[in-house]
Picture: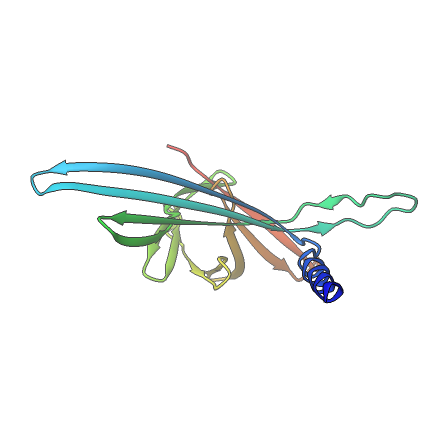
Length: 178
């Protein structure tokens, strides 16, 4: 009976110890505010969870070495805000509406009912950003389709496939800080 129990415990612990293939960083910030007004006292709890997930990619193995260096890979950042007012919970995704710059040009991203709209004040070109199920965005304007995401600093990164070079081209729209 002892052998059976020890065998099952060994099996159970060995199944749980598998290799990790992603780096995950999670941070939660909670702010509690009490508001007093003529109707009484309200307690507002705002909780913001930021989760960064990076898939681990390794460089090529070099002969006669023990360690394989890790390759840079994109980081998926999701931020969820939860506000509780007197026991009623509301969840809100982070709004990335702001001004961005790339190559000396300035762009404005505004949220709409299904994602974001990007406009350039100089040319009034309209581009659409639509959210996918894995927290990325499909970027579309009249002559380009790309996949985009917001990095940890709030910058918009677009990845576009180039048929001529058979590679992926990265474009970084840097958020303009006020």
